[in-house]
Length: 337
Image 1 (spheres, rainbow, N blue to C red):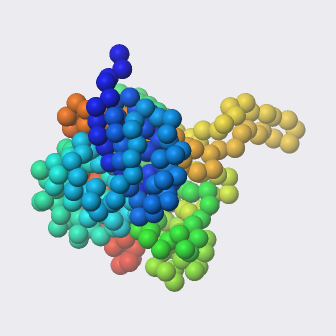
Image 2: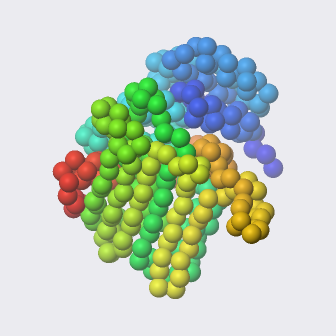
Protein backbone atom coordinates (compact mmCIF):
# COMPACT_ATOMS: atom_id res chain seq x y z
CA UNK A 1 0.00 0.00 0.00
CA UNK A 2 1.43 3.38 -1.00
CA UNK A 3 2.05 5.76 1.89
CA UNK A 4 0.18 9.04 1.87
CA UNK A 5 2.26 12.01 0.75
CA UNK A 6 3.27 14.03 3.80
CA UNK A 7 6.90 15.06 3.69
CA UNK A 8 8.07 18.62 3.10
CA UNK A 9 11.63 18.51 1.75
CA UNK A 10 14.15 21.06 0.49
CA UNK A 11 16.88 20.41 -2.08
CA UNK A 12 19.91 22.71 -2.14
CA UNK A 13 21.88 22.71 -5.40
CA UNK A 14 20.28 21.94 -8.77
CA UNK A 15 23.33 20.89 -10.75
CA UNK A 16 23.72 17.46 -12.35
CA UNK A 17 23.59 15.56 -9.05
CA UNK A 18 20.84 17.76 -7.64
CA UNK A 19 18.66 17.22 -10.72
CA UNK A 20 19.07 13.46 -10.37
CA UNK A 21 17.99 13.54 -6.72
CA UNK A 22 15.15 15.97 -7.48
CA UNK A 23 13.71 13.61 -10.09
CA UNK A 24 13.71 10.68 -7.66
CA UNK A 25 12.07 12.82 -4.97
CA UNK A 26 9.47 14.46 -7.23
CA UNK A 27 8.05 11.07 -8.17
CA UNK A 28 8.15 9.59 -4.64
CA UNK A 29 4.57 9.31 -3.34
CA UNK A 30 5.73 10.03 0.22
CA UNK A 31 6.94 13.53 -0.72
CA UNK A 32 4.16 16.13 -0.65
CA UNK A 33 6.25 19.23 -1.26
CA UNK A 34 9.73 19.78 -2.66
CA UNK A 35 11.41 23.19 -2.53
CA UNK A 36 14.27 23.61 -5.02
CA UNK A 37 17.08 26.06 -4.35
CA UNK A 38 20.14 27.07 -6.35
CA UNK A 39 22.35 30.11 -6.85
CA UNK A 40 20.88 30.32 -10.37
CA UNK A 41 17.16 31.14 -10.47
CA UNK A 42 17.02 30.11 -14.13
CA UNK A 43 18.31 26.66 -13.23
CA UNK A 44 15.60 26.27 -10.60
CA UNK A 45 12.85 27.46 -12.97
CA UNK A 46 13.94 25.01 -15.66
CA UNK A 47 14.01 22.13 -13.18
CA UNK A 48 10.55 22.95 -11.80
CA UNK A 49 9.19 22.88 -15.35
CA UNK A 50 11.01 19.63 -16.14
CA UNK A 51 9.60 17.82 -13.10
CA UNK A 52 6.07 19.20 -13.26
CA UNK A 53 4.65 15.73 -13.97
CA UNK A 54 5.73 14.34 -10.61
CA UNK A 55 3.52 13.68 -7.59
CA UNK A 56 5.17 16.31 -5.36
CA UNK A 57 4.27 19.99 -5.39
CA UNK A 58 7.35 21.88 -6.54
CA UNK A 59 8.34 25.40 -5.58
CA UNK A 60 11.44 27.58 -5.98
CA UNK A 61 13.30 28.86 -2.94
CA UNK A 62 16.34 30.89 -1.92
CA UNK A 63 19.33 29.00 -0.53
CA UNK A 64 20.07 31.36 2.34
CA UNK A 65 16.54 31.54 3.74
CA UNK A 66 15.72 27.89 3.05
CA UNK A 67 18.55 26.63 5.27
CA UNK A 68 16.76 28.15 8.26
CA UNK A 69 13.34 26.93 7.14
CA UNK A 70 10.94 24.41 8.65
CA UNK A 71 11.43 21.26 6.56
CA UNK A 72 11.29 17.57 7.39
CA UNK A 73 14.49 17.03 5.50
CA UNK A 74 17.21 18.73 3.46
CA UNK A 75 19.04 17.28 0.46
CA UNK A 76 22.34 19.10 0.00
CA UNK A 77 23.79 18.69 -3.49
CA UNK A 78 25.69 21.96 -3.77
CA UNK A 79 29.41 22.24 -4.64
CA UNK A 80 31.60 20.28 -2.19
CA UNK A 81 33.20 23.32 -0.55
CA UNK A 82 29.75 24.46 0.65
CA UNK A 83 28.61 21.15 2.15
CA UNK A 84 29.85 21.45 5.73
CA UNK A 85 28.59 24.99 6.30
CA UNK A 86 25.17 24.10 4.90
CA UNK A 87 24.94 20.88 6.93
CA UNK A 88 25.75 22.79 10.12
CA UNK A 89 23.05 25.38 9.41
CA UNK A 90 20.44 22.83 8.38
CA UNK A 91 21.13 20.66 11.46
CA UNK A 92 20.12 23.53 13.75
CA UNK A 93 16.56 23.22 12.44
CA UNK A 94 16.37 19.62 13.72
CA UNK A 95 15.56 18.27 10.25
CA UNK A 96 16.99 15.15 8.64
CA UNK A 97 19.83 15.88 6.23
CA UNK A 98 21.09 14.08 3.14
CA UNK A 99 24.48 15.49 2.13
CA UNK A 100 26.30 14.52 -1.02
CA UNK A 101 29.88 13.40 -0.45
CA UNK A 102 32.20 14.68 0.76
CA UNK A 103 30.97 16.13 4.05
CA UNK A 104 33.57 18.85 3.61
CA UNK A 105 36.82 19.68 1.86
CA UNK A 106 38.84 20.67 4.97
CA UNK A 107 39.30 17.89 7.50
CA UNK A 108 40.28 20.30 10.27
CA UNK A 109 36.95 22.07 9.79
CA UNK A 110 35.12 18.73 9.84
CA UNK A 111 36.81 17.79 13.12
CA UNK A 112 35.96 21.18 14.60
CA UNK A 113 32.29 20.73 13.68
CA UNK A 114 31.97 17.15 14.94
CA UNK A 115 30.87 18.03 18.48
CA UNK A 116 28.11 20.34 17.23
CA UNK A 117 26.88 17.77 14.70
CA UNK A 118 27.14 14.72 16.99
CA UNK A 119 23.58 15.04 18.40
CA UNK A 120 22.26 14.74 14.82
CA UNK A 121 24.61 11.94 13.71
CA UNK A 122 21.87 9.45 12.95
CA UNK A 123 19.77 12.07 11.15
CA UNK A 124 22.54 12.84 8.67
CA UNK A 125 22.95 10.55 5.66
CA UNK A 126 25.94 11.03 3.38
CA UNK A 127 25.82 10.20 -0.34
CA UNK A 128 27.95 7.08 -0.55
CA UNK A 129 25.59 5.68 -3.15
CA UNK A 130 27.66 2.62 -4.04
CA UNK A 131 26.43 0.92 -0.87
CA UNK A 132 23.01 0.90 -2.53
CA UNK A 133 24.13 -0.53 -5.88
CA UNK A 134 22.55 -4.01 -6.27
CA UNK A 135 25.84 -5.60 -7.34
CA UNK A 136 27.84 -4.05 -4.51
CA UNK A 137 25.13 -5.02 -2.03
CA UNK A 138 25.32 -8.62 -3.30
CA UNK A 139 29.11 -8.55 -2.87
CA UNK A 140 28.72 -7.31 0.69
CA UNK A 141 26.19 -10.05 1.48
CA UNK A 142 28.43 -12.81 0.13
CA UNK A 143 31.45 -11.53 2.04
CA UNK A 144 29.33 -11.44 5.20
CA UNK A 145 28.10 -14.97 4.49
CA UNK A 146 31.71 -16.20 4.40
CA UNK A 147 31.64 -17.39 0.78
CA UNK A 148 35.41 -16.82 0.41
CA UNK A 149 36.29 -16.90 4.09
CA UNK A 150 37.96 -14.01 5.91
CA UNK A 151 39.06 -11.38 3.41
CA UNK A 152 42.83 -11.21 3.04
CA UNK A 153 43.10 -8.84 0.08
CA UNK A 154 40.73 -6.26 -1.38
CA UNK A 155 41.35 -4.53 -4.72
CA UNK A 156 39.22 -1.54 -5.73
CA UNK A 157 39.47 0.17 -9.15
CA UNK A 158 37.68 3.50 -9.75
CA UNK A 159 38.47 5.28 -13.00
CA UNK A 160 36.41 8.01 -14.66
CA UNK A 161 35.95 7.85 -18.42
CA UNK A 162 36.76 11.46 -19.29
CA UNK A 163 39.11 13.76 -17.38
CA UNK A 164 37.77 17.11 -16.14
CA UNK A 165 38.73 20.39 -17.72
CA UNK A 166 40.85 22.86 -15.78
CA UNK A 167 37.76 25.04 -15.39
CA UNK A 168 35.80 22.17 -13.85
CA UNK A 169 38.42 21.84 -11.12
CA UNK A 170 37.73 25.34 -9.78
CA UNK A 171 35.67 24.10 -6.81
CA UNK A 172 36.86 20.49 -6.82
CA UNK A 173 38.27 18.84 -3.69
CA UNK A 174 40.38 16.66 -5.97
CA UNK A 175 40.87 13.05 -6.97
CA UNK A 176 41.39 11.72 -3.46
CA UNK A 177 38.80 13.77 -1.55
CA UNK A 178 36.03 13.49 -4.17
CA UNK A 179 36.72 10.26 -6.10
CA UNK A 180 38.67 7.97 -3.78
CA UNK A 181 36.45 8.93 -0.84
CA UNK A 182 33.82 6.54 -2.28
CA UNK A 183 36.42 3.78 -2.16
CA UNK A 184 37.38 4.59 1.43
CA UNK A 185 33.75 4.16 2.42
CA UNK A 186 33.45 0.96 0.39
CA UNK A 187 36.41 -0.73 2.06
CA UNK A 188 35.14 0.15 5.57
CA UNK A 189 31.68 -1.14 4.65
CA UNK A 190 32.84 -4.33 2.95
CA UNK A 191 35.40 -5.26 5.60
CA UNK A 192 33.48 -4.03 8.65
CA UNK A 193 36.74 -2.66 9.97
CA UNK A 194 39.07 0.27 10.21
CA UNK A 195 42.46 1.09 8.71
CA UNK A 196 45.78 1.12 10.59
CA UNK A 197 48.10 2.44 7.87
CA UNK A 198 47.90 4.10 4.46
CA UNK A 199 50.41 4.86 1.70
CA UNK A 200 49.47 7.00 -1.30
CA UNK A 201 51.32 7.44 -4.59
CA UNK A 202 50.05 9.89 -7.18
CA UNK A 203 50.81 12.32 -9.94
CA UNK A 204 49.47 14.30 -12.88
CA UNK A 205 50.04 11.66 -15.57
CA UNK A 206 47.05 12.51 -17.78
CA UNK A 207 47.43 16.28 -17.84
CA UNK A 208 50.54 17.92 -16.34
CA UNK A 209 48.60 21.21 -16.10
CA UNK A 210 46.56 19.73 -13.25
CA UNK A 211 49.65 19.92 -11.04
CA UNK A 212 49.83 23.68 -11.63
CA UNK A 213 46.40 23.90 -9.98
CA UNK A 214 47.28 21.62 -7.07
CA UNK A 215 45.69 18.45 -8.43
CA UNK A 216 46.74 14.91 -9.30
CA UNK A 217 44.85 12.74 -11.79
CA UNK A 218 46.22 9.27 -11.05
CA UNK A 219 46.69 7.54 -7.68
CA UNK A 220 47.46 4.15 -6.18
CA UNK A 221 46.97 3.55 -2.47
CA UNK A 222 48.02 0.66 -0.27
CA UNK A 223 46.20 0.30 3.04
CA UNK A 224 46.54 -2.15 5.92
CA UNK A 225 43.54 -2.80 8.13
CA UNK A 226 43.69 -3.14 11.91
CA UNK A 227 43.57 -6.94 11.44
CA UNK A 228 46.27 -6.99 8.75
CA UNK A 229 44.09 -7.17 5.64
CA UNK A 230 45.74 -5.69 2.54
CA UNK A 231 43.80 -3.22 0.38
CA UNK A 232 44.84 -1.64 -2.92
CA UNK A 233 42.87 1.27 -4.40
CA UNK A 234 43.57 2.60 -7.89
CA UNK A 235 42.03 5.84 -9.12
CA UNK A 236 42.27 7.73 -12.39
CA UNK A 237 40.42 10.55 -14.08
CA UNK A 238 40.65 8.77 -17.45
CA UNK A 239 39.80 5.34 -18.82
CA UNK A 240 39.61 4.88 -22.59
CA UNK A 241 37.19 1.94 -22.27
CA UNK A 242 34.57 3.80 -20.21
CA UNK A 243 33.67 4.31 -16.56
CA UNK A 244 35.79 1.60 -14.96
CA UNK A 245 34.46 0.38 -11.60
CA UNK A 246 35.62 -3.01 -10.32
CA UNK A 247 36.22 -4.78 -7.01
CA UNK A 248 37.90 -8.06 -6.12
CA UNK A 249 37.65 -9.59 -2.63
CA UNK A 250 40.11 -12.45 -2.08
CA UNK A 251 40.11 -15.01 0.72
CA UNK A 252 41.21 -18.57 1.55
CA UNK A 253 38.17 -20.14 -0.13
CA UNK A 254 38.28 -18.17 -3.38
CA UNK A 255 37.53 -14.70 -4.71
CA UNK A 256 34.49 -12.55 -5.33
CA UNK A 257 34.49 -9.95 -8.10
CA UNK A 258 32.22 -7.19 -9.31
CA UNK A 259 33.03 -6.33 -12.92
CA UNK A 260 31.88 -3.53 -15.18
CA UNK A 261 28.33 -4.24 -16.40
CA UNK A 262 27.65 -3.78 -20.11
CA UNK A 263 24.45 -2.73 -21.82
CA UNK A 264 24.65 -5.73 -24.13
CA UNK A 265 25.24 -9.02 -22.31
CA UNK A 266 25.69 -10.97 -25.56
CA UNK A 267 29.33 -11.79 -26.30
CA UNK A 268 30.47 -12.39 -29.86
CA UNK A 269 33.50 -14.51 -30.65
CA UNK A 270 35.13 -15.18 -34.00
CA UNK A 271 38.64 -15.62 -35.39
CA UNK A 272 39.56 -12.06 -34.40
CA UNK A 273 38.65 -12.62 -30.75
CA UNK A 274 35.82 -12.00 -28.30
CA UNK A 275 33.81 -8.81 -28.12
CA UNK A 276 30.95 -7.53 -25.99
CA UNK A 277 29.01 -4.33 -25.38
CA UNK A 278 30.57 -1.13 -24.05
CA UNK A 279 30.60 -0.35 -20.35
CA UNK A 280 28.93 2.80 -18.99
CA UNK A 281 30.27 6.22 -19.96
CA UNK A 282 29.79 7.88 -16.58
CA UNK A 283 28.62 7.53 -12.99
CA UNK A 284 25.04 8.59 -13.66
CA UNK A 285 24.57 5.65 -16.03
CA UNK A 286 26.56 3.05 -14.10
CA UNK A 287 24.92 3.77 -10.74
CA UNK A 288 21.48 5.03 -11.78
CA UNK A 289 19.67 2.35 -9.73
CA UNK A 290 21.79 3.06 -6.66
CA UNK A 291 20.80 6.74 -6.59
CA UNK A 292 17.13 5.79 -6.64
CA UNK A 293 17.49 3.24 -3.82
CA UNK A 294 19.71 5.63 -1.85
CA UNK A 295 17.11 8.39 -1.93
CA UNK A 296 14.31 5.96 -1.13
CA UNK A 297 16.27 4.93 1.97
CA UNK A 298 16.65 8.56 3.05
CA UNK A 299 12.96 9.30 2.55
CA UNK A 300 12.11 6.16 4.53
CA UNK A 301 14.31 7.31 7.42
CA UNK A 302 12.64 10.73 7.42
CA UNK A 303 9.12 9.32 7.20
CA UNK A 304 9.68 6.71 9.91
CA UNK A 305 12.02 8.83 12.11
CA UNK A 306 14.64 6.10 11.88
CA UNK A 307 18.44 6.24 11.86
CA UNK A 308 20.19 7.00 8.59
CA UNK A 309 22.98 4.95 7.07
CA UNK A 310 25.70 5.73 6.07
CA UNK A 311 25.70 8.40 8.75
CA UNK A 312 27.81 11.28 10.01
CA UNK A 313 30.51 9.04 11.46
CA UNK A 314 30.91 7.14 8.19
CA UNK A 315 31.42 10.49 6.47
CA UNK A 316 34.02 11.57 9.03
CA UNK A 317 35.91 8.25 8.77
CA UNK A 318 36.08 8.45 4.97
CA UNK A 319 37.18 12.09 5.11
CA UNK A 320 39.92 11.19 7.60
CA UNK A 321 41.22 8.51 5.23
CA UNK A 322 41.25 11.08 2.42
CA UNK A 323 43.14 13.54 4.62
CA UNK A 324 45.73 10.94 5.62
CA UNK A 325 46.14 9.78 2.00
CA UNK A 326 46.87 13.35 0.97
CA UNK A 327 49.36 13.64 3.82
CA UNK A 328 51.05 10.39 2.73
CA UNK A 329 51.34 11.71 -0.82
CA UNK A 330 52.71 15.04 0.37
CA UNK A 331 55.24 13.55 2.82
CA UNK A 332 56.19 10.54 0.70
CA UNK A 333 55.71 7.97 3.44
CA UNK A 334 53.22 5.60 5.02
CA UNK A 335 50.97 7.18 7.63
CA UNK A 336 49.86 5.30 10.75
CA UNK A 337 46.52 6.12 12.26
